[in-house]
Amino acid sequence: MGEAIERATAAQLDGVEVTLALAFQTDPALSWILPDPEHRARALRGLFHVLVPADFRAGTVLRSAGDEAAALWRAPGQAHGGMIEFLRTVIPLVATFGSALPRGLKVQGGIDAHRPTGRFWYLHYVGVRPEHQGKGHGGRIIRAQTAAADRERLSCWLETATAENVPLYERLGFVTQVEWDVPGGGPHFWGMMRSAT
Image (cartoon, rainbow, N blue to C red; front, side, top):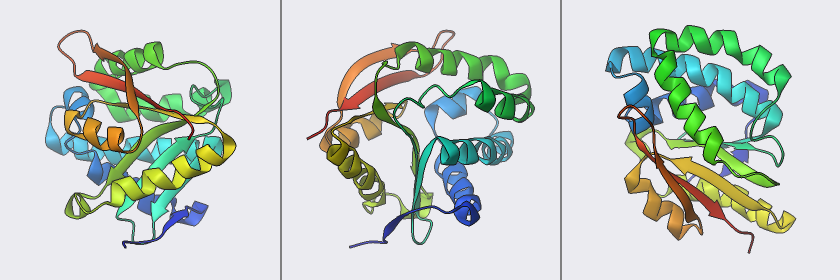
């Protein structure tokens, strides 16, 4: 059956940050932005220390009870953030990425250019700790929020640079809407939408 999925409390955000930093260590986009594995490990902890609280304020953060998996969902209308969020996050993100910032901006620019407009739940990040991958945790944590979106009659959107994850998302009802390559030899991305059922 697996661990229960719950909304994270503010006190549980540190565990979510660790889960996502471990899960994204081999992500194609973040590996391209931060090619050195040791630097990437440190930077990912800093990245999620900024993003997890921001997404906690802008939507919902889900976690499995044992911190095997975590998902950051931005509420409808919150996918792009706003000026207050920008001001809260810009300096820590510049410090986190350092000289890798230009690559990070290329990736983010592609994501922003291809994300649709309108009202939808945005799956900003979802990850499973490496030792727990392949056991259904990712699907369970995604279904927890897509079920809520269905009750609200809202679609869900995500982007991925991991080709192996596309079939998983398809099994969960997501359909590829757009694909693109990040300029300068960057990763390939899929933008996927799931309509309410």
